Length: 344
Image (cartoon, rainbow, N blue to C red):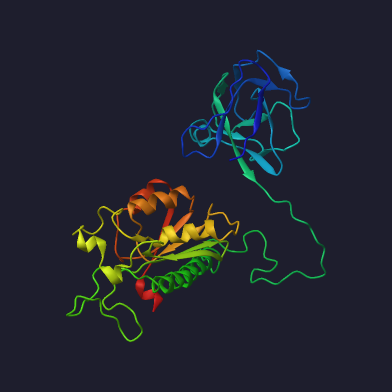
């Protein structure tokens, strides 16, 4: 989390604040009226009546040291625009990293009624974003696109041939691709719960050495920027006895499915995938990553997932539903589902 330095230019000025935990913008408060030419202060000029069709530059009484390469955008407040017709004259405005003056908000009255600007009312919001400065390279020819030189209005009013549809098609294809990897990872699971036993009370294996009747095998793949950065599957933790040799601990203790998760010798697929990222020595962040699971996460794994700042969880639909999905949703993590039929 970055820290942005802010300084009050006047003792009674108010520092911008977020209105809720989910808000991305910092509301700013009216302090004084600035001259649009000189940007000099006109103290004591509030309240100020902004008549229909007029504009005024309102100072917020604070200054920022926006760090490079962050951009601070001044955006309108929807409440002012909807209720009173008050908009920004230059939306969005920008506070550059090298600016150190009293940030001004250019308000315009688009309504048919006068609007009184009083000291301390919220007049705009600030949104901070990290940006990239590209290198502009002159070339003889640009790459071709279907749109070509089509300018304003060239995509029409109703029919959309590409854009959103094409984007979601690519997302679906990507989800199926990585979910197949997660399913492949799940094949390495050695969970013996529910597997078929022979007359000697030993677990049966098929011609490939796989446990017969194995249904609790789960896989996980973590993707960052369209690259697989880790994977996992449920298997006994290092140092634990193999359930295939001594029997499933949960079966022995008659533990109902989905309860007392701690009473298990196994590491869950999500836990293994995240642990691999720590032990591999590869410096890749899970911030904003996408996780692909062959089943919904348990409550314990759900808490770990949201704590790892996973952006999106993609789940194989209808496979071993668990209780962790609500935790995922409450944390604002996006969830997508892949139909099992799509993997065929």
